Image (tube, rainbow, N blue to C red):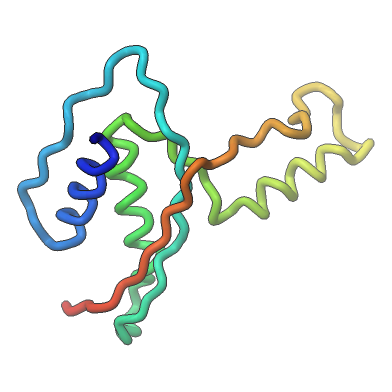
Length: 120
């Protein structure tokens, strides 16, 4: 039920509706779903100074976090995170504070999208 409600809220957000009401806060024993949001494809033909795909993904990420029903994990800069973890294995770095292998969180859902129409 909540998944359908959230999808409806997200579609309203992107349809330009201003009066979006969020669901009530989750109960204390709620286990949030882990999701990742990727950049949206810009199929609108708009080539202005804005990065529409990254901007829409950022807006959606912020709204998902506000609901407190989801844990949103970073995926767009994951290669930098993995590079840092690999660098920590170098003997020139201290052993204290190293991230153990296998500590990154798996996303249960990957959210992708496309922008098909855009006007200023």
